[in-house]
Amino acid sequence: MVNRGAPPSSHHKALSREQFASVDSAPRRLTRRVPVHAGVQVLSVTLILAMIGTCLLHQVPALIRLFPEGDLYLSRYEGAYTIPIRLFLFSFYIAYASAMAASIKGRVLYAVDLCLTFALVCVIFDCLALLARLHLGVPMHLYMALPISGLAGLLIFSARILRHGDMPRRDDSPLRKRIHPTQFLVASATVSLAAGWSMAVARQELSGVEQLRHLALLGGIGTGVFLFLPLLFVLLNWVAAFHALLFPPGRFAPPLTVIVPAHNEAHIIAETIACLDAAALRYDNSVLLLVVDNNSHDGTGEVARAALASARKIQGRVVIEREPGKAHALNRGVAETDTEFVVRIDADSQVSPEALARVMRHFSNPLVAVVGGLALSPGGGLFDGVRMLEVILKVGLDQVAYGAADAIIGIPGMFVAYRIKALRAVGGFASNMNGEDTDAATRIGESGCRLVVDPTATFVSEVPRTFEHMREQRHRWFRSLFHVMARNRQHFQMRNFSIRSKLLMPYMLINTARRAIALPFLLFALLFLLMSPDPRSTISTQAILAFLMGAPMVMVIFSALVMLRFRALLSLPQYLLFRMYRSYLTLESMLSITFNGFSERCQGRRRGRKR
Image (cartoon, rainbow, N blue to C red):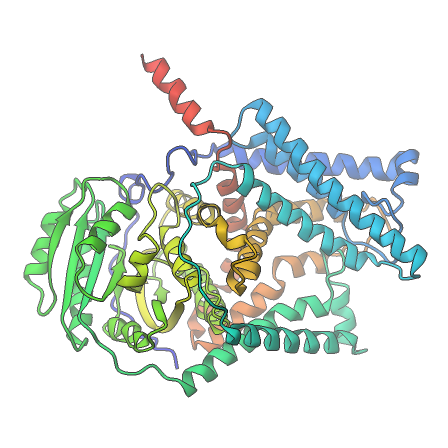
C-alpha cells in the first residue's frame, strides 16, 4: 500500500523570476528565450496552410483525380478516413520552420528537409501498399495507413530536431557488458498478453466496441490500439507488484551523504533542512548534509547554517561553489562525498520522515544503483491539483511499469539516491545542458545497473504558482529529452541492445513530438469538422472528445484509484485542460532549441551593438 503521508507543506508562494530562473533555464549556445508570438505563429500558419490545402484537394479537379482519398496518398486504400493527417503534417512542418530559431535560409532548408523526408517515406509506403494489392491481393486500409503515416511523421520531426538542432556533444559512458534476459522475457510476455487481449476485445461484435471504433481520430485507431497501451502498463505494474512481494527489499541503512544544491533559496532552505533532520531521526545511521551554495545573493548560506545549528540529528556544512549551474554544484557535492551512497535533494523539496529509510532499503540489492520517490504537491496553487495527477500517472504508474522491464528512463532529480561508485563511473552530472538528472540515471542504467522508483518514498516538491514560472519549468523539462538523447547517441547503436535504448528512447521522442502537435491537431480537427469538406470523412464530435480525453483520462483515473489518491481526482477536469496547455508549452520548448549556432550569433550581434 502506498504511504500517503507527507511532511507538512510550506506556504509556498509565487516566486520572482530571480528566484526560479538561473543559468540552467536556457543553456547558452543551445537554446533561446522563445518569443511569445512564436507558438501562436506556428498554430496560425499550420491551420491556414492545412485548410487551404484541404480546400484545394476537394475543389481542384486535377488534385481530386491525383489524390482521390482526400489526402496526399498516391495509392488507393480501402475504407474511410477521419482527417487528412499527411496534409496536416506537411503544414505543421512548414509552420514550425517559419518560427524556429534559425536564419531565414536555415528555416527554408529545414522546411524542405522535413517535407522531402516525410514525402519519401510516404511514397515508399504507398508503393509497398500498391504492390501488396496488385501482386498479393492484400488491400491496405486507411485505418492502418493513417496511424502509420502519423507515427512516421512524428518520428521524423523529433529525429530531425535531434540531428540538426544545437545539442550537447556526444559523451560515451560505460555500456552493459552482458544482456539481462529477464527484462526481455518480461517485456515479451507482457506485450504479447496485452496485444492478445486487445485484439480479442477488438474482434468482439459488441455494441460498445463497435461504437468505440467510430471514435478514432488519427485515421481509425480502433479499440485494439486504444486498449493496448493501458493493458500493457497495467500488466507491467502487476509484474512489479509481484516482484516486490516475492523479493522485498531488505533492511539497509549505511552511512549517508545528502547534497542540496541551492541558488537563492533562503525562502525555503530552512524548511528543507528541518524535514531532512526529521527523516534522519528515523534513519538508523549517520546522515551528513552538504548544502552547496551556488552564487546565492539572498542569504541562503546564512539561513542554511542557522538551520543546521538547530538540527537535532543531522550533521552538515555549507559548501561554496562559484561556478554557476546546478550540475557544478552537484559535482562539487559528489567530490566532497566520502560515503558509499549519496542522496541529492532540490532545495525546494521536503522529504517525508520515512523517505530516506524507504529509498535506501532498495540498495540491499547490489545491482540497484539509483532510487527515486514520488513527488507530492504542496497544495493551494493554481497547478497543484493537475501536477498531482500528472505525477500519479507518470511516476506512480508509468515509471513503475518501466522498472518491471528494467527500462526506466531517468528519475526526476528532486529526490534521488545514488550508489556513488556508479555515479562517478558515468562522469557525474553533465553541465551546460538541461536534464542532468535524467542523463545521469539513464547512463547508470545503460551501464548495467538497475533503477528503481518507490512511490512510498514521498516528498513535497514546489509547483509553479504563475504561468511564467510554469512556462520556464516546462521549456526546461521538455527540451531536456533532446539534450539527453544527443549526449548519449551511442545508445542508439545496435551494439547497445536494451529495451531502454531500442524501444523506450524512440517512444519518448515520438511522444514528445505527439504532445507538440496535439493542440494544432485538435484545432485543425475542429475546423475540419465544422467545414465538413468531405462527406466521406468519419470525423465526429465524439471522436474529437475521445482525442481530448481518451486513454490518458482512463489511465489517470486508474492510477489515482490504485494509489488511493481519491481526492486528486477532483482536479480531473482541470487536468484535461492542462494537457492542452502542456501541449502548447511542449511546442514552445521545441521552438526554444536553436539551429546552426543561432543563439551564439544573436549574442555576438548584441555585443557588437553595445560596442
